[in-house]
Length: 512
Image (cartoon, rainbow, N blue to C red; front, top):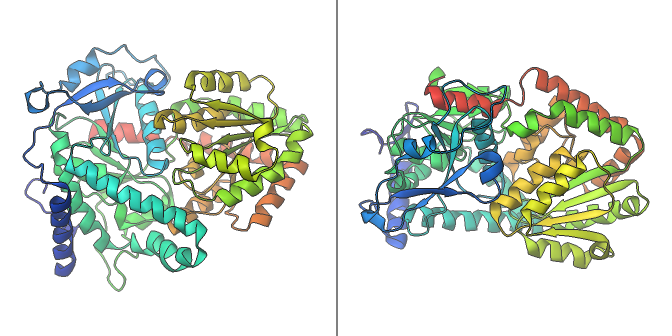
């Protein structure tokens, strides 16, 4: 509960059905029986360096302090003040230096980590010291155990949806588009989020806080934090993402209206809308390093593709490791272009080494021709930096067992790529030309719609033959890529990609 309010009983003045509320309470009780009750446990935190993104983004990682209840409480303000000041940028805020900003997140696929990195990057560019709080990263706690259990189920369902079409049509698509959309779904999540409250003991109540999944946002509100921004992903309004008591940031005008009116969240009911101070349209959540270099990167793409150079494709495998058959077909299609020097292929399998092994086994010649960049993040950084202005040929595969390096490698490679081949996940909102392949879950469909409307990506292509045909089109008509660069620059001029900066402002101010 937050300030005496039971967030599971109603949402923005819309009372839940009593049976829904009772079910949510039973669900929480079931998790307590399964994973234990740590509501009275004292957890203290410590701030440490963060792999991969610690140096470039200035991110501090919040972990459990050694010694448990006997450990001293973390003085977050003092730790932030002790960090080297962030390099000044045109986005730097005068009074931000030495102040902390917490990014609350979970790993569920790669998307929520990717949003978190965008928030941390923007915070750093504005002068704040960003802190990383992964609620799934405390295996001793009940809340983390619940998140790990649910994430395992979600990943399994995601992979199964791509392997078994009837399951996808009958279960996965409806669940991800309409099931999570229902107001009733929010009740269970709110109760479960209460289990994460013990992890917030050391955070000041008024610290600027951005949650990049509803659970960290809900938990922060339950813990009494007052400056909570709930960075809503995707572009399809769902009650799953509601965290009453926070400011809901949304990336598109359509999402703003849909969330404001709680559209379709209780079929047959006209719901009370969200109040004005609970929601804000911010624009797309994008890292500062990408936004600040949009003009230079688009100019480099035009020079490459219109000048007759090879088209560089970045193929990013999603966090669930789904769609392997489609990835194989794409690699097979591009191999002849690569061999003729007309294309370059970057394949980032994240931390899914087994996915690379499967690709290399199924696609003849892929392993022999690929240069591997596995487990050396500094080498990947150097490669991506050199590729911004230098020539690149062949196939390059990327993998890292460290989740931070695995996710952030794609961020680095985006800048030196011409086309990002991706499902309509959070990548839909990034300023790079995109070929949007079939979604994994119905909620992702509207990400591709947004990209197609902005003009920085294709519409969603759910047929493999059509995906391969689009690759032929990019190769034959380079103006398609140049035109997407034009649209990226148009969108940038009106602040479409400024969402992460706006979220930081909202968290710092504590109001819309």
